[in-house]
Image (cartoon, rainbow, N blue to C red; front, side, top):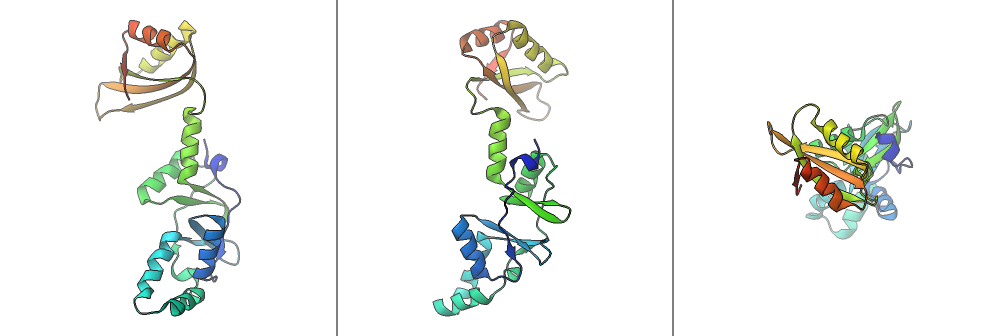
Length: 213
């Protein structure tokens, strides 16, 4: 799955010369937490998040009264508090690349750039939605965890067993290692069937270990 399939295409932006107060109003009115900042050509030059505003205002509050603070916020351009050179992704990148960037840099959203123009934004919620879609979470069926040897061809054997038995259709497959060098691999199966007892017996009779992962 690619970023372009999950991103929000209608992106609310703010000009770099607009004020911090404008940014506050835009975020509140649209119930968003981050605003891409663009120049006159519509090119991304930064991003301002609600946390940037929160951190900026208290730093001024110790020496200013409320009216002075409001005046300052109304006169301060977002370019002074925005994060410059924000991390971005291309619409044609796999969505896991976006997830990796968000986790690595502890950020909740990424502008999507194509030919130097912002064409979308993808957030952690979009990544969660993609994960649910990939795993088929909303589809009716059963979920099983199976331990298989961490060797070439073992997953094919498991899938072949399920296919030959004609007891279910596979919705999704995911797998993980408990630790590096583990001899067994946990496989999470989502199956389109109501015959859970029959599937469990089929796997147990074939020597597979069912797990609670």
